[in-house]
Amino acid sequence: MRVIGLMSGTSYDAIEAAAADLALDGDVLHLHPIGHLSAPYPDAVRDLIAATLPPATTTTRAVCTLDTRIGQAFAAAAERALHDLCDGRADLVVSHGQTMHHWVEDGAVHGTLQLGQPAWIAEATGLPVVSDLRSRDVAAGGQGAPLVGMTDTLLLRGLPGTPAALNLGGIANITVLAPGTDPLAFDTGPANALLDAAVRHFTGGAHAYDADGRGAAAGRTRPELLRVLLADPYYRRPAPKTTGKEYFHLPYLQRALEAVLPAPRPDDVLATLTRLTAVTVADACRAHGATQLVVSGGGVRNPVLMRMIAEELPDVPLRPSHELGLPSDAKEALAFAILGFLTMHGLPGTLPSGTGARRATLLGTVTPGRSPLRLPEPAGHPPRVLRIGPRLRA
Ligand SMILES: Nc1ncnc2c1ncn2[C@@H]1O[C@H](COP(=O)(O)OP(=O)(O)O)[C@@H](O)[C@H]1O
Ligand SMILES: [Mg+2]
Image 1 (cartoon, rainbow, N blue to C red):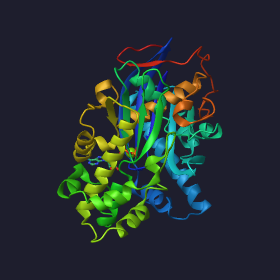
Image 2: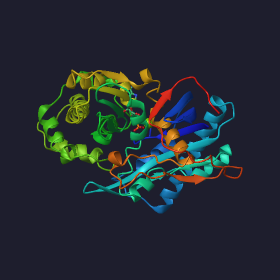
Image 3: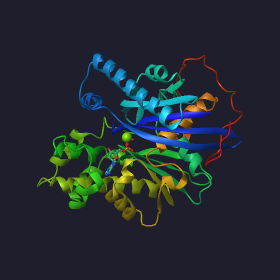
Image 4: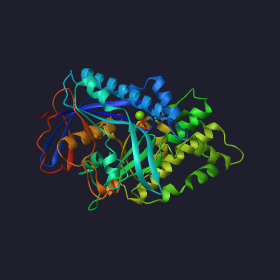
C-alpha cells in the first residue's frame, strides 16, 4: 500500500509530507521510503495560527477559517507529494492536521483538537484520508500523544541495550524500550517551543527560530534562570504525560524572566533555554536508563542544542534517525503514514504503556476518496518490528 503521511507539529513552520510503500509480512512491517518534501505554510495561514493559539482568545468564525485554510494547505502538500514523489499513484493519505489545542488538566488529557478539514485533501487527491488520529486514544483514557511511540517501538526493537528515540519539535518527546518491559513514551518538555517564542519576541517577529543556534552560542547559561525554569513540576511528574504550546508559551517564559535580576541578555536567555531542553531530555533519558538515543526533528539542525544534549549525556551515543533509514525531517510524517496504514488493516496504533490508555485502539476518522471505500483484509496480528529498505511488496 502506498501511503502519504502529512504532519505539522507545534512549531507550525511547515507541513512535512512523506510517501512510503508499506507491507505487512507476519511480524515485520516493511517500509520503503519514496521521498519527502516540506511545504511551508502560506504566511497568512501561519499568522492566523499564531494569532489563534493560546493565550489568545478566538471565535468560531476564526476556527472555521483555520480549519478550511489548514485543510487547503494540507491538500496542496498532498497533491505535490502525489505528483512529485509518487508519479500520481498512491492508495491513502494520512493527515495529522495542525494541533490547535491539547487540553491537559492535572495531568489528564480531556480533549485534543487538530484542525485541517480532511475533505479538502480527499477532494484534491481523490484518495481516502485517515485524519484525527489522536481523539480515539483520548476517549480510551489516554493522552492521545505521543503517537510516534508505536513507530519508535517498531524501529528500536532489535537494537542493543535500552534504546530510546527522541524527537525535537516544538515539544520534545521520547520513547524508551527497556528489555523485558513495555515501551514508555512521553513528552519531556519544550524542545524549541520556548526558544522560538524568545527569538520571535526579541526580534519583534523578524526571526522565527535561533538559526544554527547562533544566539545560544553567543550567550551563556544563567544558572538562576535555569533554576527557575527547572522548578516547573511538569518535569517531576511521572509518565505517561504530555504537554503543548498552550503551556510552554511566551507569557510562561516572561513570568520566569521576571523572577531573575538583573534581566538576562537575549543571547543568555537563548543559551539558557537551549540548556533547559538538554537538561530535561537528559534527565528523562537517565531516569529510564537509555543507553543510546536516536534523534529526529528540527532540533537536530541546531548544533548547539545537539552539543548540549551530548554534554549532558556523555555516556549515551546520539544517532540521527536517518542512520536507521528514517530522515529526521520525515520521521513524524512517516510515523503517521504507518498509523493510517495500521487503521486500514484493522490494527491498533497505540501502546497503552505509552499513552496511558485503558486499551489499544484503532485510530482515526476515514474520509472516502473519489471511489467507494475498500479496506484491505484485516491483518491477523500486529507487527513487532519495522524493516526499512528498498524491497517493494504488493
Ligand atoms: N537550522 C536550524 N537551526 C536551529 N533550529 C532549527 C533549524 N531548523 C529547524 N530548527 C528548529 O526546528 C523547529 C521545527 O522543527 P519541527 O521538527 O518541524 O517541529 P514541529 O514538529 O513542532 O513542527 C523550528 O521551529 C526551529 O526551532
Ligand atoms: Mg514542523
